[in-house]
Length: 240
Ligand code: GLP
Image 1: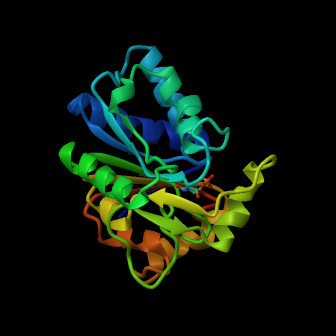
Image 2: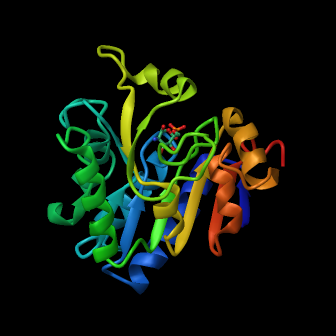
């Protein structure tokens, strides 16, 4: 696991964008795994800037998002579908048919999860996977538990995640379930980039780097990935 620590979020985002640029330049039809939350926003802004400046193109890029809430209309302001349109897809030259996000409203969620895994496999798996991290060490919505998860599945969100994310749900109730890529799907990515900023992430980062590889801190599995890079600010790296 490579660890890079930055004095501010802007420099961190420039490095993250450089890694995306390198991946897309080498392979214009790269398969990208994308994340939501506050952590990737500045990186997405920089990718939009580079796309508008003609430095990179997403015309042949394929994307798979990590996760989506269940029982929340796609058009809801808090859906990850809306988040991705607003923070990235609506501003770049990606083809809508190349964008994949789980359907959290699927009537048969097991079939939806299986189909999602099949689409990732058919695309040749993920070249570059972007991750944030929950304060409890979750990646995607893989909450701490007794075993590492494998493919895409439906999860009941933990109390700590509901508490952390309910700040966004000012006019509606926060969903209790989500569909998420499993740890197994994430680990199949050729390269993994995890972004963490702020002191609230310091314990999760400590456990990710120095803790045992354990499903009680799902991100700790990255210790066993051959090409995982952690991009941290000083506050998130404070306990290292
Ligand atoms: C959410 C998402 C994760 C994200 C995490 C951290 O629960 N499902 O993919 O990494 O929260 O979010 P933030 O970056 O806003 O701290």
